[in-house]
Image (tube, rainbow, N blue to C red):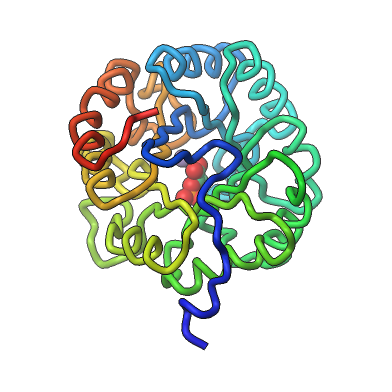
Length: 270
Ligand code: PEP
Ligand code: MN
C-alpha cells in the first residue's frame, strides 16, 4: 500500500489551533522553571499577540543528569499562568500514565521527537483525546522518514484522536553548524500526502537563536501552517536550550518579520 493510500486522515482544523488562511505561532520557554520565570516569559508571548504558550513540565532530556522539568508542579504553573493570561497551553507528555494529568493542565499535548515511534503512547494519547477539545502536536522523530511520521500520526487518529498537528523539527545529518537540519521539503511533502496541518520548530532544528527568524520566514514560504518557537525573558539564564531561545524583543519582532511573507502566501499571523 502506498503512503497516500494509507493516510486516511482528512482533517483541516485542530480544535481551532490551525485555521485556514492563518499562520499560527506558538511561543514560550523550553521548560517551566518557576512561577516567576514562566509568568515573565508568557507575558511576552501575550504582548507579542500570540494565543498559545509552550512550556515543558516533563522534559525528554538526552542526559539523565540534565534538568528533567518540574513535573506536576510545572503543569500547575503552566495552567495557572496560561489561564490568567488567557493563553492556551502546549506541553509534552512522556508517559501514558501522565496523559490525564497533562490534559487537566494543557489544551495541546506534545509528543516529542524522541517519542514519535512510542506506539503505546501514541495510541493512549489518541484514545484519551477522542471526543475532547484537546489536540496533539506530533514532532517528527529526528531519524524518521515522512512516511514513518505520517504513520505515527495514524496511530493517534486510528485510536480516535483526530486533532493532530504535525511538526517538523529538524533531522540528524552530517552537518554540524546547526543542531539538526531543518527539512522543509518534508513540510511540503507531508502536506501533499495528508490534510493534517504541518508546523515547523525552527528552534530545535537550528539550536541557535540567530537562525530562528530566517528559518521562520522560510517556513511560511514552504507552506507551513505555523511555528513553535522557544522564547525566554532571560535567555542566557534558561535551564534548558538557552542558546536557541528568542529574547523578548526578537519575539515581539517576529510577527512583523513574518507578516510580509504570510501576506504573500495569503495568510495572517495569529
Ligand atoms: C521540545 O519541544 O521541548 C522538545 C524537546 O522538542 P523535540 O522533541 O523536537 O526535541
Ligand atoms: Mn527545548
